[in-house]
Amino acid sequence: MITRKIGKKKLKLRLPLLIFEGSSLLEVTIAMGLVFFLLTGLAEMLASSLLIKQKADYHRLAADIISNELEQQKGAGVDTPDLSPGLHQKPVEEPNSGRRFLLSWEVIEISKNLKKICLSLSPADVSQRLSEVRVTLYFSRHLNF
Picture 1 (cartoon, rainbow, N blue to C red):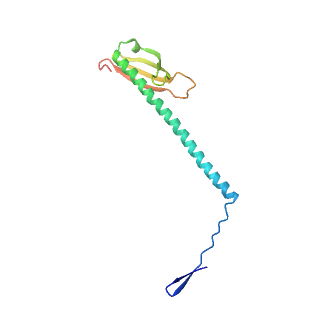
Picture 2: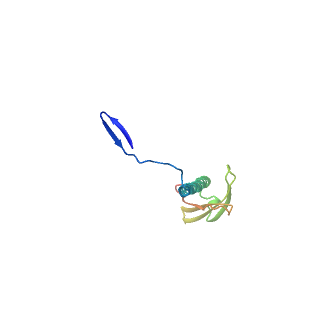
Picture 3: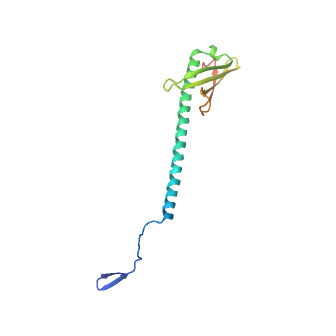
């Protein structure tokens, strides 16, 4: 019991006695389990963010390669052999990393003045788990694009 003198009155305060004697084995086990659970969630989140970043980099690279190929085909004109009806393929190597891809495109002549070009880019190495990226372009003889 603690007494405190305020003015002429004595005030008696009853505070519970807190005694810390250390942690029990059960408390330590629960704390370690909680920390392990949180660290597992953090590791899973980091792994998934790395996978998402890898896919985003691949899609950006695929968009660059396909865009360059489309620009080359548009610049060559509508009568180039690359734009003849049928299925075409060529290997492409990314200059910065040296990764190899297979670029395929199918040309379908819809009318005399309109061609449909369906491009797809996939990794040349089959062991990579990256998906195929597809793009479709309509090429008009009158508009020249």
